[in-house]
Image (cartoon, rainbow, N blue to C red; front, side, top):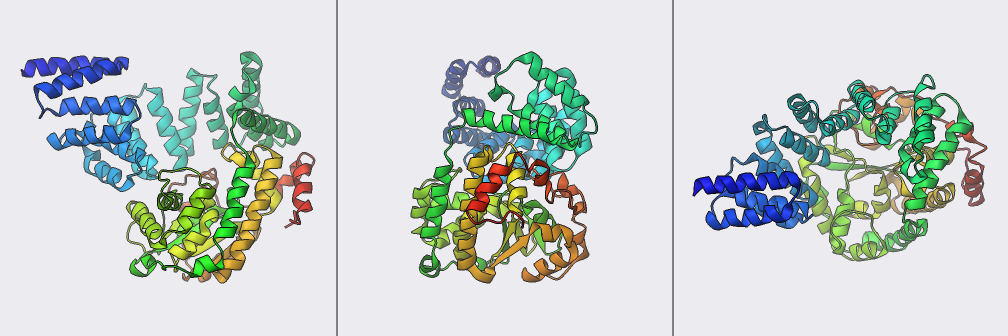
Length: 525
């Protein structure tokens, strides 16, 4: 019988390579029928469900295979991967810790385990596994690209550049790799620009297929001080995204307005108060604000303190709010989610958040969650964690808006009109939090911080209840990963290069300036 089972397994593995999932499912059932205690049949069934994007069913199969044979590291890593999909982060982390030392001969599962570590926000844990996968199978481009992406997050710019250059030698038309390379170094000459322009001229692709290369060209032309040409490509990129995006900024503004209405003073002071912070030895520090306003800089400064660690950017508060509303999962919130969550016992949100973030933390008494968009949820944060510290970053509106406009990440920032409308709504919400939270809201001015680093840092640490430490002024030596668009800048000392940079593009940004000023927002501060 064992010979027959081996033959069925071999046939199934060949079918997996062909992605013939119907055959894999049939063979898995045959193995299960012949021997219910053979983990292979359940492992193969898990692969079938994984291919069909059914993480609950696939995780059940992988879990059963692992129960039958705890040595099956392939089932363990596949299960961790599915747990990540199901937002069962702590369980995924435990599996990785248990099995990561058993993967030495499997580049496939070394790479998968590394990707799960990265998905958990633990990029430093992912790096050596990505390295091992590449050492075992150095000719697989996907493994090399994964290693490079992880290297960027860890500040390993030289390693990442070498990989992207090598990949571009092999695939010179790969637009995303051109984009990734452009972000890793400051352009010193037009050679790469001319190469990318040649790609645009010869491939003849529609604009929506050129988005990455448009952003790369905008960035490198900006490096060379060719301001008008740079903006032209940023605008092409934003217009191309809008062409294919299903987005209406009015929806996000509606959510902001509903938050202001629901999360008011009466709501904040009524209902059960959370005891989570009182019971926990850990105090959360939430660093929020619009993206590109200095949240990462402040995170690096504060996390360099001996009493503080960083959980980096997490979606866990958003997840906890969605869970309380009954929506579950991850993703943006809407008006209904806010209204439903606001009616729930705040302790459930606090407990869900702390349970989610726990695996990222060590033994330091304070930890940072630096997810910029948590500015939407400050009411929930203040109510759930009475002892939490909240830092809100502010930056010159024009610099902040332009910094977002030239990145590919922010759905409200692909047009100057949407961007200005969202900025105004965000500022309205910020003023609401000011009035509601008073001194609990620690506001930090980006321009003041980069021009008077030591004084501003001392003031900030004092407001956080922390003693000054010299390491906070030397944050560029902090080796922790950073999952943000500023991942390389935070390896540098504080600088003022980005202050008033928008003025280089003053002509093109005039409509943005006019709209902001028409709503009473000063663009000079």
